Image 1 (cartoon, rainbow, N blue to C red):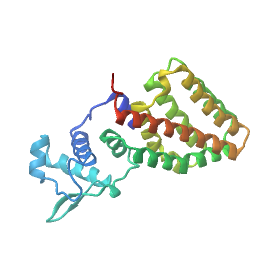
Image 2: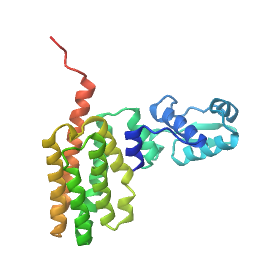
Image 3: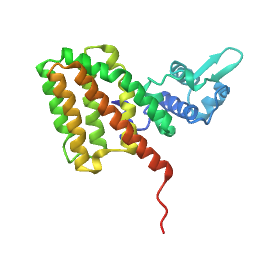
Image 4: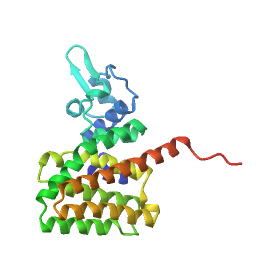
Length: 252
Protein backbone atom coordinates (compact mmCIF):
# COMPACT_ATOMS: atom_id res chain seq x y z
CA UNK A 1 0.00 0.00 0.00
CA UNK A 2 2.85 2.34 -0.85
CA UNK A 3 1.05 5.25 -2.51
CA UNK A 4 -1.73 5.50 0.07
CA UNK A 5 0.63 4.91 2.97
CA UNK A 6 2.95 7.67 1.75
CA UNK A 7 -0.02 10.02 1.33
CA UNK A 8 -1.04 9.33 4.93
CA UNK A 9 2.43 9.55 6.47
CA UNK A 10 4.16 11.96 4.03
CA UNK A 11 7.22 9.76 4.51
CA UNK A 12 10.52 11.15 3.24
CA UNK A 13 12.79 9.06 0.96
CA UNK A 14 15.24 6.97 2.98
CA UNK A 15 18.21 6.74 0.60
CA UNK A 16 20.20 9.15 -1.55
CA UNK A 17 19.01 7.31 -4.66
CA UNK A 18 15.35 7.62 -3.61
CA UNK A 19 15.81 11.29 -2.72
CA UNK A 20 17.21 12.15 -6.16
CA UNK A 21 14.48 10.15 -7.94
CA UNK A 22 11.71 11.79 -5.89
CA UNK A 23 13.07 15.33 -6.23
CA UNK A 24 13.56 15.23 -10.00
CA UNK A 25 10.42 13.16 -10.56
CA UNK A 26 8.25 15.64 -8.67
CA UNK A 27 9.74 18.59 -10.56
CA UNK A 28 8.95 16.94 -13.89
CA UNK A 29 5.40 15.89 -12.97
CA UNK A 30 4.62 19.30 -11.42
CA UNK A 31 5.72 20.96 -14.65
CA UNK A 32 8.68 22.80 -13.09
CA UNK A 33 10.77 21.24 -15.86
CA UNK A 34 8.94 21.31 -19.18
CA UNK A 35 8.72 18.43 -21.69
CA UNK A 36 11.53 18.64 -24.19
CA UNK A 37 13.86 20.36 -21.74
CA UNK A 38 17.37 19.03 -21.21
CA UNK A 39 18.28 18.35 -17.59
CA UNK A 40 21.55 19.74 -16.17
CA UNK A 41 24.58 17.51 -16.63
CA UNK A 42 25.84 14.88 -14.21
CA UNK A 43 28.37 17.23 -12.63
CA UNK A 44 25.76 19.86 -11.80
CA UNK A 45 23.16 17.37 -10.53
CA UNK A 46 25.75 15.52 -8.43
CA UNK A 47 26.72 18.81 -6.82
CA UNK A 48 23.09 19.82 -6.28
CA UNK A 49 22.17 16.61 -4.45
CA UNK A 50 25.54 15.88 -2.89
CA UNK A 51 25.70 12.37 -4.37
CA UNK A 52 28.23 10.44 -6.39
CA UNK A 53 27.87 10.10 -10.14
CA UNK A 54 27.17 6.40 -9.60
CA UNK A 55 24.14 7.19 -7.42
CA UNK A 56 23.00 9.86 -9.88
CA UNK A 57 23.22 7.53 -12.89
CA UNK A 58 21.19 4.86 -11.09
CA UNK A 59 18.58 7.50 -10.27
CA UNK A 60 18.46 8.53 -13.94
CA UNK A 61 17.92 4.89 -14.93
CA UNK A 62 14.99 4.70 -12.51
CA UNK A 63 13.44 7.89 -13.90
CA UNK A 64 13.92 6.61 -17.46
CA UNK A 65 12.16 3.35 -16.54
CA UNK A 66 9.22 5.44 -15.30
CA UNK A 67 9.00 7.12 -18.70
CA UNK A 68 9.90 10.58 -17.40
CA UNK A 69 13.26 11.10 -19.13
CA UNK A 70 15.30 9.80 -22.05
CA UNK A 71 19.11 10.04 -21.98
CA UNK A 72 20.75 10.53 -25.38
CA UNK A 73 24.44 10.49 -26.18
CA UNK A 74 25.86 13.94 -27.12
CA UNK A 75 22.43 15.50 -26.48
CA UNK A 76 21.78 15.07 -22.78
CA UNK A 77 18.85 13.86 -20.73
CA UNK A 78 15.57 15.03 -22.23
CA UNK A 79 12.33 15.35 -20.26
CA UNK A 80 9.56 13.37 -21.95
CA UNK A 81 6.00 14.38 -22.72
CA UNK A 82 3.35 13.31 -20.16
CA UNK A 83 1.88 10.81 -22.64
CA UNK A 84 5.11 8.81 -22.16
CA UNK A 85 4.89 8.69 -18.36
CA UNK A 86 4.14 5.34 -16.77
CA UNK A 87 1.03 6.24 -14.80
CA UNK A 88 0.75 2.67 -13.55
CA UNK A 89 3.91 3.31 -11.56
CA UNK A 90 2.97 4.01 -7.93
CA UNK A 91 5.51 6.83 -7.52
CA UNK A 92 4.53 8.60 -10.75
CA UNK A 93 0.88 8.38 -9.73
CA UNK A 94 1.67 9.77 -6.27
CA UNK A 95 3.57 12.70 -7.76
CA UNK A 96 0.68 13.31 -10.15
CA UNK A 97 -1.79 13.42 -7.25
CA UNK A 98 0.54 15.72 -5.29
CA UNK A 99 0.90 18.02 -8.32
CA UNK A 100 -2.77 18.96 -8.19
CA UNK A 101 -6.12 17.46 -9.06
CA UNK A 102 -8.59 18.35 -11.78
CA UNK A 103 -11.86 16.96 -13.15
CA UNK A 104 -10.15 15.32 -16.12
CA UNK A 105 -7.71 13.40 -13.92
CA UNK A 106 -10.49 12.19 -11.58
CA UNK A 107 -12.62 11.17 -14.57
CA UNK A 108 -9.76 9.36 -16.32
CA UNK A 109 -8.83 7.48 -13.15
CA UNK A 110 -12.44 6.39 -12.57
CA UNK A 111 -12.72 5.31 -16.22
CA UNK A 112 -9.66 3.07 -15.86
CA UNK A 113 -11.05 1.56 -12.66
CA UNK A 114 -14.37 0.90 -14.39
CA UNK A 115 -12.55 -0.90 -17.19
CA UNK A 116 -10.92 -3.37 -14.79
CA UNK A 117 -12.52 -3.67 -11.36
CA UNK A 118 -16.06 -4.75 -12.36
CA UNK A 119 -14.46 -7.47 -14.51
CA UNK A 120 -12.29 -8.53 -11.57
CA UNK A 121 -15.39 -8.67 -9.36
CA UNK A 122 -17.21 -10.84 -11.91
CA UNK A 123 -14.26 -13.23 -12.02
CA UNK A 124 -14.23 -13.29 -8.23
CA UNK A 125 -17.91 -14.28 -8.29
CA UNK A 126 -16.86 -17.34 -10.31
CA UNK A 127 -13.88 -18.26 -8.18
CA UNK A 128 -14.48 -17.11 -4.59
CA UNK A 129 -14.31 -19.75 -1.88
CA UNK A 130 -16.18 -19.62 1.42
CA UNK A 131 -12.93 -18.43 3.01
CA UNK A 132 -12.71 -15.60 0.46
CA UNK A 133 -16.26 -14.50 1.25
CA UNK A 134 -15.54 -14.58 4.98
CA UNK A 135 -12.43 -12.47 4.38
CA UNK A 136 -14.42 -9.85 2.49
CA UNK A 137 -17.18 -9.74 5.10
CA UNK A 138 -14.59 -9.17 7.82
CA UNK A 139 -13.16 -6.26 5.83
CA UNK A 140 -16.65 -4.80 5.30
CA UNK A 141 -17.22 -5.02 9.05
CA UNK A 142 -14.14 -2.89 9.66
CA UNK A 143 -15.12 -0.53 6.84
CA UNK A 144 -18.41 0.19 8.61
CA UNK A 145 -16.81 1.00 11.96
CA UNK A 146 -18.12 4.44 12.93
CA UNK A 147 -14.80 5.17 14.64
CA UNK A 148 -12.96 5.25 11.30
CA UNK A 149 -11.05 8.39 10.42
CA UNK A 150 -9.91 9.52 6.97
CA UNK A 151 -6.77 7.40 7.03
CA UNK A 152 -8.29 4.22 8.42
CA UNK A 153 -11.35 4.14 6.17
CA UNK A 154 -9.25 4.75 3.06
CA UNK A 155 -6.85 1.98 4.12
CA UNK A 156 -9.65 -0.52 4.75
CA UNK A 157 -11.44 0.47 1.52
CA UNK A 158 -8.21 -0.16 -0.40
CA UNK A 159 -7.81 -3.51 1.36
CA UNK A 160 -11.28 -4.55 0.16
CA UNK A 161 -10.66 -3.68 -3.49
CA UNK A 162 -7.24 -5.33 -3.56
CA UNK A 163 -8.78 -8.43 -1.94
CA UNK A 164 -11.35 -8.61 -4.77
CA UNK A 165 -8.51 -8.42 -7.28
CA UNK A 166 -6.73 -11.24 -5.42
CA UNK A 167 -9.88 -13.38 -5.37
CA UNK A 168 -10.27 -12.98 -9.13
CA UNK A 169 -7.13 -15.16 -9.36
CA UNK A 170 -6.03 -13.03 -12.32
CA UNK A 171 -2.55 -11.53 -11.75
CA UNK A 172 -3.21 -8.76 -14.27
CA UNK A 173 -6.12 -7.53 -12.17
CA UNK A 174 -3.90 -7.34 -9.09
CA UNK A 175 -1.34 -5.37 -11.11
CA UNK A 176 -3.67 -2.35 -11.31
CA UNK A 177 -3.44 -1.89 -7.55
CA UNK A 178 -1.63 1.43 -8.00
CA UNK A 179 -4.68 2.87 -9.77
CA UNK A 180 -6.91 1.88 -6.88
CA UNK A 181 -4.42 3.35 -4.41
CA UNK A 182 -4.44 6.63 -6.33
CA UNK A 183 -8.22 6.78 -6.04
CA UNK A 184 -8.00 6.15 -2.29
CA UNK A 185 -5.31 8.83 -1.93
CA UNK A 186 -7.55 11.35 -3.70
CA UNK A 187 -10.44 10.37 -1.44
CA UNK A 188 -8.22 10.90 1.58
CA UNK A 189 -7.35 14.39 0.35
CA UNK A 190 -10.81 15.53 -0.75
CA UNK A 191 -13.91 13.52 0.03
CA UNK A 192 -13.73 11.03 2.86
CA UNK A 193 -17.02 9.75 4.34
CA UNK A 194 -15.28 9.52 7.72
CA UNK A 195 -16.83 12.78 8.94
CA UNK A 196 -20.36 11.35 8.86
CA UNK A 197 -21.35 8.02 10.53
CA UNK A 198 -24.29 7.72 8.13
CA UNK A 199 -21.94 7.93 5.14
CA UNK A 200 -19.63 5.35 6.69
CA UNK A 201 -22.60 2.99 7.05
CA UNK A 202 -23.63 3.68 3.45
CA UNK A 203 -20.14 2.90 2.15
CA UNK A 204 -20.07 -0.37 4.08
CA UNK A 205 -23.55 -1.33 2.83
CA UNK A 206 -22.54 -0.66 -0.79
CA UNK A 207 -19.48 -2.88 -0.42
CA UNK A 208 -21.58 -5.55 1.32
CA UNK A 209 -23.77 -5.70 -1.82
CA UNK A 210 -20.69 -6.69 -3.80
CA UNK A 211 -20.00 -9.54 -1.37
CA UNK A 212 -23.65 -10.66 -1.36
CA UNK A 213 -23.72 -10.90 -5.15
CA UNK A 214 -20.35 -12.62 -5.19
CA UNK A 215 -21.46 -15.20 -2.63
CA UNK A 216 -24.55 -15.91 -4.76
CA UNK A 217 -22.27 -16.49 -7.76
CA UNK A 218 -24.12 -13.79 -9.71
CA UNK A 219 -21.44 -12.37 -11.97
CA UNK A 220 -23.54 -9.60 -13.49
CA UNK A 221 -24.88 -8.39 -10.14
CA UNK A 222 -21.35 -8.41 -8.72
CA UNK A 223 -20.11 -6.44 -11.71
CA UNK A 224 -22.88 -3.85 -11.34
CA UNK A 225 -22.43 -3.53 -7.57
CA UNK A 226 -18.72 -2.81 -8.08
CA UNK A 227 -19.51 -0.33 -10.84
CA UNK A 228 -21.95 1.48 -8.54
CA UNK A 229 -19.31 1.80 -5.79
CA UNK A 230 -16.74 3.26 -8.21
CA UNK A 231 -19.25 5.64 -9.82
CA UNK A 232 -20.46 6.93 -6.46
CA UNK A 233 -16.92 7.47 -5.17
CA UNK A 234 -15.89 9.32 -8.33
CA UNK A 235 -18.99 11.54 -8.18
CA UNK A 236 -18.32 12.47 -4.55
CA UNK A 237 -14.71 13.22 -5.39
CA UNK A 238 -15.67 15.45 -8.33
CA UNK A 239 -18.13 17.41 -6.18
CA UNK A 240 -15.53 17.81 -3.44
CA UNK A 241 -12.97 18.94 -6.00
CA UNK A 242 -15.39 21.53 -7.38
CA UNK A 243 -15.98 22.87 -3.85
CA UNK A 244 -12.25 22.92 -3.17
CA UNK A 245 -11.53 24.83 -6.41
CA UNK A 246 -14.34 27.30 -5.70
CA UNK A 247 -12.95 28.00 -2.23
CA UNK A 248 -14.93 29.14 0.82
CA UNK A 249 -18.23 30.87 0.23
CA UNK A 250 -18.07 34.66 0.63
CA UNK A 251 -19.37 36.01 3.93
CA UNK A 252 -21.86 38.83 4.20
